[in-house]
Structure formats: C-alpha cells, structure tokens
Image (tube, rainbow, N blue to C red; front, side, top):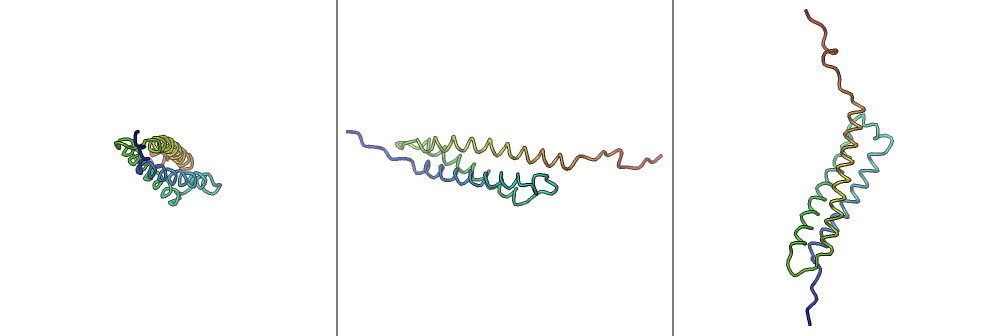
Length: 121
C-alpha cells in the first residue's frame, strides 16, 4: 500500500499570496477607473503603490509556485493553480499599466520644442 503524499505548503502559500495580489489588482483597477482619476491629470500615488505592491505579490507568488512545483514527493496541484493565476495576474497588471500610461500621455500631450522657443536670429 502506497503512502498518500501531502500537498505542498509552498503551493498553498503561493495560492494565498496570488489571491492577495488579485484583490490588490482589483482595488487598483477600481481606483484607476474612478471618474476623478480616469483623466490622469496628476499621478495618484496611491494607485502607483497599489499596482506596485500587486506586482511584488505576483512575483512572490510566482517564486513560491515554482518552488512548490519543483518540490519532491509533494502534490503539485496548488502550485500549478497558483502559477496559472499568477501568470494571468501579471498579464492583467501589464494591461492596466499600459492603460494608465496611455491615459497619462493622452492628458499630457508633448509640447513642441521648436514652437516653445522664440526665434533668435
């Protein structure tokens, strides 16, 4: 009779950390799409902090998930689920960061350097 292996504690931790990162991403998405911040007249530092900490949690979850998948004699189910959630989370964070950058550039058009300087003979 074969002994039943246990689930990887690293995989469970990775899944919990990626869930926390997902919650922080949802908060930053809600905050970024609020009418007072969607115009991006000034950079809301709390939005940058939320998105940055969400990226940090995703990287931590990615490392924990990789560690759980590589762990011998443990079930890898939670580690694989955490890796899939984390990869989706990173794609969503990149998408939100691109949207924020586009909104920033749309509200702050570049000034023409030649038109700004007076003509000097």
